[in-house]
Length: 259
Image 1 (cartoon, helix red, strand yellow):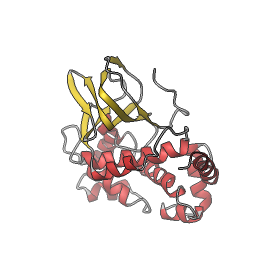
Image 2 (image 1 turned 30 degrees about the vertical axis):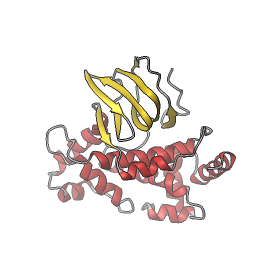
Image 3 (image 1 turned 60 degrees about the horizontal axis):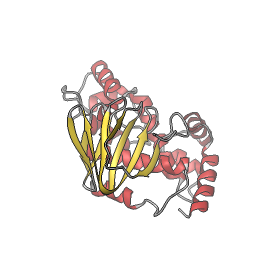
Image 4 (image 1 turned 135 degrees about the horizontal axis):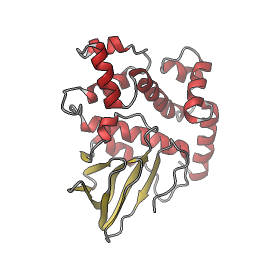
């Protein structure tokens, strides 16, 4: 039985132990599987995949997958609804494996030991970091055969969160005509350039809010918002609460479980 997500757009991050008896299902959100101990075998579209301490696996939304644990195992599973963490949609359209890079291992090493209480803010922070590291791990072109540099565009936007993004300038930077670039971007990322860039900025805000003592106005400034009210408005539209409340709830929950 799949766990219920706390909110329609929230990612869910948790450890799962897979039984050795084979099982299978599909769900309307994509998944990342990253091995913490042992391994789990998956079959999708007639291909075999192995989630282990060396390799993770992407399970696309609505993809029937058979799975079984191999001996003593524990996998970190990230359930990601389509409107949750900002990652290029093209990365999750087919099953694929990816290497557990040092950046990914760094995020996995941050996991608290033992069972943890459900915490929306912590799940977001961890899912954002893991998804960004997976995007970098895949690298290369995933532009469905047309040579559209999805990974490079994603990395470029992540480096320029404080700068406004104009589609014409972005297209020129990567050597494409504006209309063709816009169409391919929407297909590959599932958003317009402006919408995707804004999602990246708000994802980054989740991590910045975890830094104690960093004023909200400074966070908004680092992310290119003209003032704190603009940042608060955008954040509230995305997450359903202002950033100050998000930080207070995160601090309270972290204190309860010693994070």
